[in-house]
Amino acid sequence: MRDEPLVLGIETSCDETGVGIVRGHTLLADAIASSVDQHARFGGVVPEVASRAHLEAMAPTVERALADAGVSFADVDAFAVTAGPGLPGALMVGVAAAKAYALSLGKPLYGVNHLAAHVCVDQLEHGPLPEPCVAMLVSGGHSSLLLVPDVASDVRSLGATVDDAAGEAFDKVARVLDLGFPGGPVIDRLAREGDPAAIAFPRGKYNDGTYDFSFSGLKTAVARWVEARERAGEPVPVADVAASFQEAVVDVLTQKALKVCKDNGVHDLLIGGGVAANSRLRALAAERCAAAGVRLRVPRPKLCTDNGAMVAALGSELVASGLAPSDLELPADSSLPIESITL
Image 1 (tube, rainbow, N blue to C red):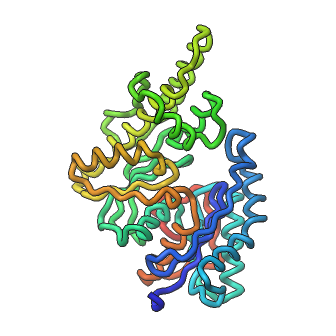
Image 2 (cartoon, helix red, strand yellow):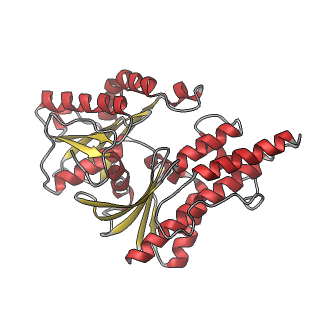
Image 3 (cartoon, rainbow, N blue to C red):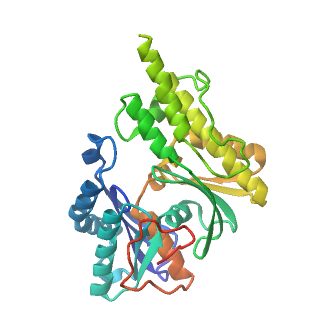
C-alpha cells in the first residue's frame, strides 16, 4: 500500500469544508467542518456565508486531516480539489487553497468534478467500480442518472432534474411543515412513524419515457394539501405527510434508476449524494434491485454527503490512470458538466 500515491482532496462546493486523505482505495482521513448551523435560520444555504465559513475553516480542517492520517505535507504526492459544479464563491475558496498548497509544495494538482467524485467515493468502501455501472446521484442540488464506463475518463449523463432536485424538495417540504433546515434527516426520521400510503401525492414524470426527474409539482402538491387542512381547521398529520412525500420521491428515483439499468443492459447500480443517506431510499432500492437482479452499491451515510474523501478518491483514481494534472491556472466552474471529469 505504501507504494500507492497519497492524495489530499479538498471539497468546498456548498456548505461543508471537507478534507480527505486517501492512499489508493484506502481512506486515511475524512475531516469535515460544516456551516449548516449558520444557514439554518435562513432556511437554506446562503452563498456568502458559506464562502466565509470555508475561509475560516480551511487551514484548521487541513491540519486536522493530516493529524488524523498521521502524515505531513511532505508525504502528500498530489492534491485534488472540487472545481465544479457548485456555488461560485465557495468553489473559489477551495480552488485557491489547493493551488496554494500545490504550488508551495511543488506537487501536482487535479481539479475534479463534484459529481464524478460522488461516484468514485464508493471505491473506498466497496472496492473498484464495475465497468460499466449506472450511478444515481441525489442531493440538494442534483438528481442525476449517469452511465459510468470509466469513472476516470468516461461518465455520461442520461437523465437529470428539470426543476427541483430531490434534496431541495425535502428542504422545501420541511419548511412547509415547519421542521427546520436541513429537511432530509428530520423527514426521514418522522416518516418512520407515518403511513406512506396515507396521502396519494403525485409522481412527476413517472412513466414519461425519459430518465429525467421533476419534484417541483410534488413539493407544490404537499404545500397545497397542508394549506387545505389548515384552512379547514383540521390538524396536519405531519408524520403521514412526511412518509407519503418521502415515498413519492423514492418511488420515482428507484423506478427511473432501474429503468436505466434495464435499458442499457447494466447490472450494477450505485447511489450517491446526500439523499442516498435516506433510510427509505436505501431500503426500497435494495428491494427493487434484488427483484430485478441488479447489484446495489451505496456508501455508508457519512460518505454520501459532501466530503473531502470523495475528492481524494477521484484524485487517486486519476493519478493511478496516468492522467495529466490540471494547470495551476484552472478556474472554478460552477456549471461544470459531468462529461468534464477534470479541468
